Length: 123
Image (cartoon, rainbow, N blue to C red; front, side, top):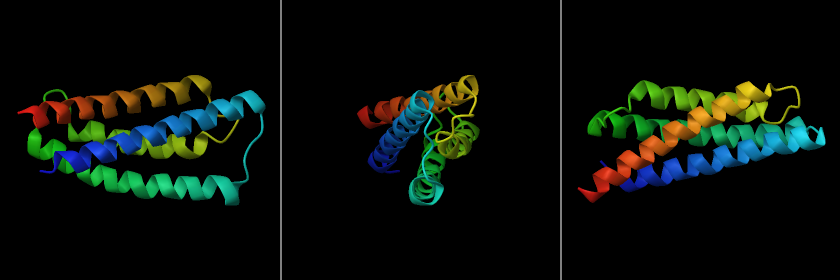
């Protein structure tokens, strides 16, 4: 299994998560929502496409390496959650507590995966 490609894809997912979180914080601060067709849709499509590729890599990596305390279901939930909050990040009415909880949950799974990959790379 290629540790490096899974690691790089996971790092890219963390970048998307940061961008999603920043989108949300900006919308909350300014109260200005972006145009759906020129800003939101292209970004959401990009994240969805990449997330599908990442999920394939991550699912395969977790299945092959069976890291302790990280399961395929967590990776799948992470994928679903990032897709869910991706579009929500552009709207003022999105629940703050729920959004931030999702961000933290996604980040935890991504960090856990990176930690496990780093362990395997050292072996």
